[in-house]
Image (cartoon, rainbow, N blue to C red; front, side, top):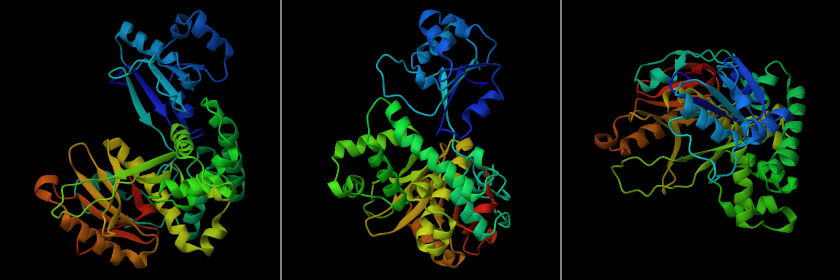
Length: 400
């Protein structure tokens, strides 16, 4: 807010965008609820801006014309921190909507990390890891069973004090709203059954590069695969609702000529969404720990994105044609980077550490620089740096 005319906060419904913006805003216009405000945008738009700033325009995508009005008012007033826009969906590209570059900054908001919800000690700092500092700490903030329950409940502010039964009921209603109402509000009619099948298919393949042809079969169900164009439209709808987020392929300078795989890895913004789509809870997860590992990875990816966002970092995945892979590579604009393997079981740390060291040996550090850290993120235990230089990090010890 101190550096630009307006800030757009984007994220899935119920992640806390409005509640956060209300802490800063001095005036509020709720475009999704206030019919008179929507009429004023057409009849007397200046009235909406004749209020103490910062002005919050909540759910701005309901009336996309507000975008150009905000942009124009920033130009006319030449001040910073004037407006906040929140949106739980991204409208389609519109030639009539001008770029907000230099005027409107975008902030992605996600459900809360374990550190934000009070379920991580934060002893291990992502910032310090990327600066090459040795980190120690305890993952005692959560035992294993409680961690599994946090995967099911998720990081939704409304569910911080909810038990698992209450959370699963809330999430079922949440997904029903998405499939039957919010998808249609984007301006395209989609079959809710196909949306539900797509979310379940994405949940079953969490943390994996899934072929579009396989997704088409799962979504089509007994009627056969749906058309590729239809599938991409469904995937686009989930992205525009900020429910999914891909880890694109990280392409470093390599010492070898090994061919890298470029398919993105698909994740939900919060692991609870996938589990709700599958209709399973902690009992089922504890009965199938191999499958649980993939949902644990989704939780870790959510938190990694949140902890690296203040550093302007991005998350990628590295996979080569020989079957070698690294779950998460954090990259910063100044070329600092770190690589992490996600292993729910502490007994898998040795193998994961060896994989990270093998991966690091392939990077041409003369062109790409040495990693700030290599780390194995696990479920429980203590954090520290092994003699081989690889950090072991319980997720309930990780923080910004």
